[in-house]
Image 1: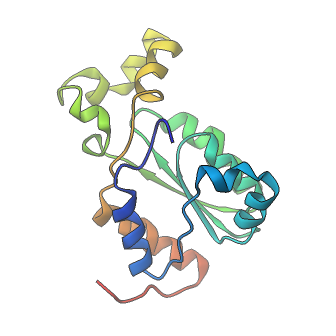
Image 2: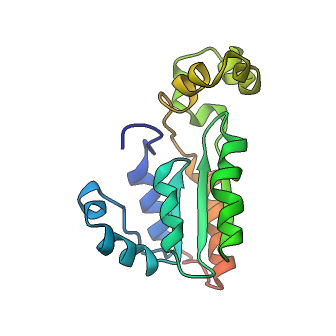
Image 3: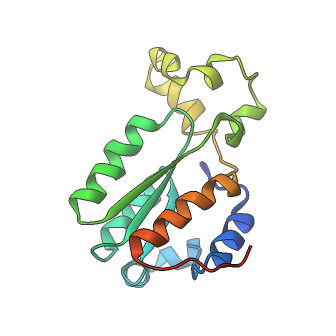
Length: 167
């Protein structure tokens, strides 16, 4: 809840419910009881999260479930290495939603042509601490729900479920 938050979570949950998902947002209270939280996740067919430690809960998903990783600006490689490959190796289905620069909270802090926005790869040359201080510690996301809809529709297809026709 400190970094890499979905700033428009209410809007994303509303979209998901319109498409026919039953959404159970993870809360800190819920995660305090490890055994109970693992049981909840084990009964889910989908987990969605922004790249970070919370996605390690993919370990508790049942075979065939879908992991949707929201990949923040600059975190393509660690996203796949930490969660994408392992998800597939565990028998899960994996989708990525890579945010566009305008979906990153960094876009409000830096000019569009600043290397932080325009060329995150070049920022890695400053070393992990400098890179992490920007892309890991200071970045939240505001998902473009119209673009994210495509990922959710693909999720329903992978699960063999029709989407709710509501707009």
